[in-house]
Amino acid sequence: MHLLEYGAVTDRGTVRSVNEDSILASPPVFVVADGVGGNADGELASAIVVEEFGKLARRPVIDADAVSATIQAAHLRVRGLNVADEPHGPSSTAVGAVGLLAGEEPYWLVFNIGDSRIYRLPAHPSEGADERELSQISVDHSHVQELVDAGVITADQAAGHPDRNLVTRAIGAEADCEPDFWMIPMVPGDRLLICSDGLLAAPYADLLGRLLQPSEAAAAADDLLQLALAAGATDNVSIIVVDVAAVAAGEPESDEVTSVQPHPHAPVPDSV
Image: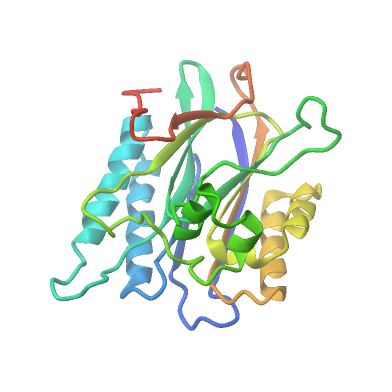
């Protein structure tokens, strides 16, 4: 497994009186959970998500089944917070990366439920490119993303849409909890950005510029938080930056992102 360097910060922002975000940075498990705004006890829901993943981080061996079971355990606990006569009970987004081995090769198992996000900044430019490009791995489970996918609005219009905070999936929100999964080889020099949507009000170009700086992960995370606060940060902001610093046993043959479960018909394997 690789040597991982990381930084993690969370802040209530400039407007909110309560921080409903929770974060976990406990190698090889990194998670951001955002209590869904406007719902009761959102901070409790996100705390449950992080608590369950904290249990996972203490396990001597982690596989895909264990990650899936952790998500379902968190979902059941958050569902248990619902009150019968309350139309919108507590819920939370969850996005993260869990390091594990596929054979002898180290990989990230990336998961997402809701509109918190994970990005990847590769160690090297892709073939034919002059610079490294920041790419979004996760796909938002949100009303505006559905509108973008349907061609009703553009991605730029989605950023200012009045329903941009309306998520279509969240832990605890519905009877079932269906995450998306991706498998990504751990490549020395890669940097991951895991964040709640409070960071996304900051200009994209500025985000990329800060991530490209040759700073340590902890300094990069703090720099991004200051950028978000300077941009207004009307929502809670949570940021985890993870650097793959070294590899101990073999490098993956490819740094191509592989989808494990982008759609319901693509099941998660029993082990990876």
